[in-house]
Image (cartoon, rainbow, N blue to C red):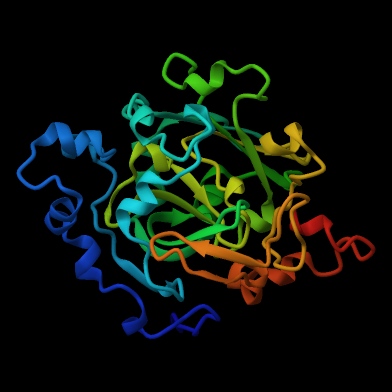
Length: 323
């Protein structure tokens, strides 16, 4: 029997943007200035062609155990203000990201698993079961934040599907590599492809999520289509986009930003308002949409769910878990 427990981020439904507002596609298009415009503008805004949005259906049923605790960020803000260094260092990269072809999309699962494989993304999602929607907070290391309804599946389902060996302790995730469509990957001073990692305990946590959609629709390219990680208690750079490979390993992965500057970006990257970035404070965050600045919470408000993962770790280094 499933017993719903009130999570520490839970708030009354009245405190969250009503579902009908963000699911009303026509209303959003009108507000964004696309009313009466054809499919070309729909594609230009970053949404997948309806005929190619096979993973689904959307909107996925909402899991009310995950409600975010804040009003939703306006959809146009969350889908046009984003980091995706494969397409450039500015926030306004959504137009460039439309060059990324996400159908078909192959995903490799390898390393310390029972049966290494390469599988079509849609086939993999069908194997993992039905989608659900979760509303999560997202906290960028740059001290801005948003609250977003993601559609997808628990990462623990992929772990169960892969059947890792007992010796596997970490999950390494790697994005695509294609400089012909991603101009940022031509910059060879970056350690492409983008790599991130979690311990298997972190990856198995109930909050760890593989997202395929956003705002009741398939994921747009700039937000990480067709499949991205969402780990809401960590800084956003941990939530790798457009995943092409999952590798189960007994070695701690060295992540993209860790390779670039290990003094500023570590492996763990858990949110902590009391541990500043070397170049700015993490005590507060700017909310996309309203521009309001609010206090940052330990583990981004998810401490009750994830703090036990780190009990007793690094007793003599208060910074290690939080950058």
